[in-house]
Length: 284
Length: 136
Image 1 (cartoon, one colour):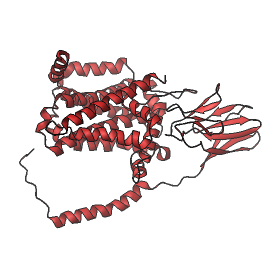
Image 2 (image 1 turned 90 degrees about the vertical axis):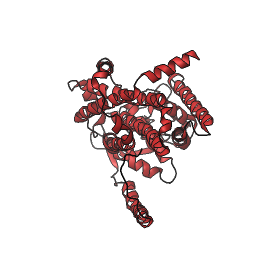
Image 3 (image 1 turned 180 degrees about the vertical axis):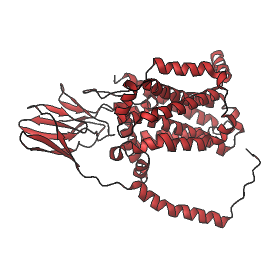
Image 4 (image 1 turned 120 degrees about the vertical axis):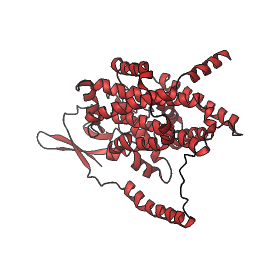
């Protein structure tokens, strides 16, 4: 119980929201720089060129990669830390903020796909097939968002640099307009850590290797990749993730279903973690 | 969340017009999004040769040669679209994402894939002969 309390106190003491915002700014700035040399018609070539040829390209790509991942992780921590305070939000504002999470995930995911290395290509194709599995409007949704096998990375690129950012800003605007001014000087250790991480830890890039028998997708996609082995794409790729997002949108303390929803979300996360560990260990 | 702005509430008639207008817009929008630009079949000239009882891996397909016969099968897995590889020692094709297995002729040996891999037409032309693979 003490450990849980200490963890709770630690969680509350850090300004996760500000950290998340700092990482968002770093991600946007480094993203603009990476975009100067990235070419969606030669995705893998231009990504490799960033790493190998272009001066400081590897650093800016790493900076973009790690700041984006941290933006998402800190946003999650922020949600946990201020969950109790979120009771003051009305239902619509709360749902709109929760919907930012899948949009951020889509931004991360499209970033992975844009590398178009072996994991990026596979992740993109899997996403395309998952959307195709949705009855009635699945193929329209695929034509809107991915259509990689037909149109290359044109749509993925458009949504990564434009549509999903606009959607995120629209959803988060009411929240962000009150907090968007962060004092950079108060967060110098964080900025320095992210910058140095970019220097010392390269962003992943997986060239195609002949005869390779197992490739894994992005870390947040691993559980889903494993689930797709056992269940049809519509269930594993659509209904299961939508169930979690749906549960999160109605997870409020004042709800009479709160204990059941909390149990569901907890079981979902434990199950997903188990599948992720399975994906990382059993097939390697 | 009241920020002091007074919004004008639209009348029900205006809302209905807006709803109907949006629904009308939906049809051209969906037709526009769903349109696929017709593409010509892709004919790929293969540089390099395929040894007798050998194989040649290309980005979209794998060329195989057995008993004086030459054929090409797609490398795109019919389960979820990952790019499959040839397992030389075992003599079958395997998807690295979910380990679906296919025979060298493209038939499913092991799921989760349910459909066989498409086979492509291979033509030998010219002197010295070059290989042309047609992907539809």
